[in-house]
Image 1 (cartoon, helix red, strand yellow):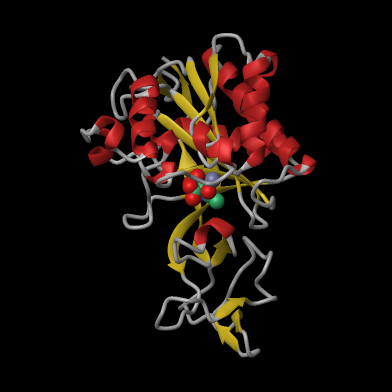
Image 2: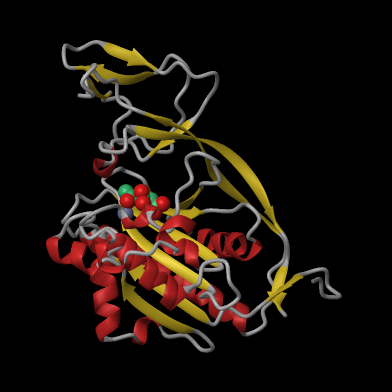
Length: 313
Ligand SMILES: CC(=O)N[C@@H](CC(=O)O)C(=O)O
Ligand SMILES: [Zn+2]
């Protein structure tokens, strides 16, 4: 639908959930959600119902990423329709509950927006994660946050990759947004990371309030980093890693990696170079949780997306 001004008219975004503890050892999100559950003043906005929610309480209790299986991969159609009740893996049961409360995924009854709070051990800074390049509401929100947070920066990771995309907790909402802030070790709280996450969420809610009040957002462009390929550690025949992230690459998330640049360092000191065909921007470099997922880092390519003007219908 288009208004006389050419803006795309969208439904008000009234129902907003803030998820923490999708991974029980990512402490900023867990702590913020627990804080806001006790006192929600900070996340209240006019015309917005904000619901803080701990998605994986058993994993939070144990301070582990998950109990049976990764909740942030569990929102597949198969899992959400699986029968078996108490015999299903804990996170599959939990995914079904979350889908009942905040979804159903893909339906008009689903929550408008879900922010899912994560921490990474990688040196990524503030990263917003999008699952679609066609979600103009989310793109406008990204533009708003990036402008408002200047001179600090906040990058946008776009995962639309047909094979590398996964079924996230936030994917039950109409507008899913991941917020990934690092570096922060698993099970640890760092005040700078905690505060950075808090500021982003405040700006995101401010945007939703302005939108719901009827503000029109003019067309804009948003720089994103599109997920391109997964790079695993070199491994031996038994699957054990035989090299580490090279010191020149460690902590250099979002910096250009060119063909021939050092990428890994073997335990006996040999350098393995990047063999790609052009410049890429690696991120999630040496993320602790990704050793089990056979991923040393992910490469991305820089792209500029255009967001249409939007306003409330
Ligand atoms: C380190 C970590 O957990 N990252 C998240 C990224 C995301 O939310 O898309 C994950 O793998 O689920
Ligand atoms: Zn996480």
